Image 1 (cartoon, rainbow, N blue to C red):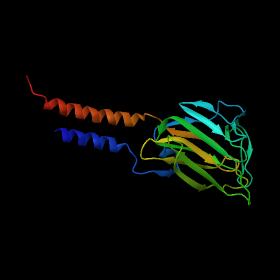
Image 2: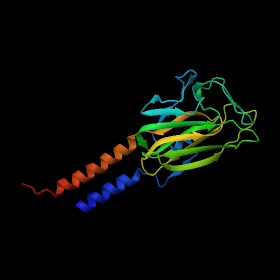
Image 3: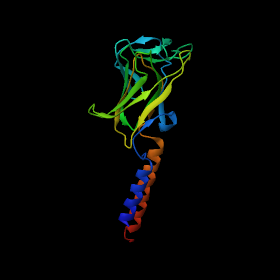
Image 4: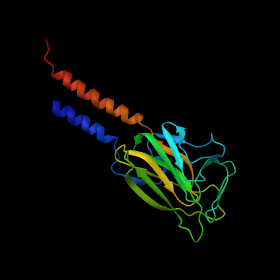
Length: 209
């Protein structure tokens, strides 16, 4: 009976883990997300640390701005006119630290590009010790006359071990940061159901007086 109960708990636990780590190219891949949209900022020039709420802290390179209103992205068009976002300096790094490890995070991004610069954004997930868990170089090319265009990129993991996520690219811009909430509502419900099943089976094993 106890083995059966443990098997039920194991199956319940594995059900809410993704099959494998992966590059996320759609916001829907970030489960139960906390959303940071930078709308509460008004052109704050900072390299951080800046607490964004929900246990998320921002760090950036020199020239980084929270609540940016306009950015020329060169051959990738421009961002602005009603859009409020985070922007990196020329070296382009926007990094987000999580108080509690997450298993998924991503954002809508673009960057400054010309023929002499790489058309790509590098997204990297870091572990608790600052070690690189995964990194991806993602091509980012939008029309030269485009406005507020870009792509969603992020990283999902099989376990909650992401303590920081960074986006690097020349003059990188970013909006709508999605971070899987910890604990996840679905995860907690399934875990409690599994624990309940174990408790019920254990109770049945008790001798009746």
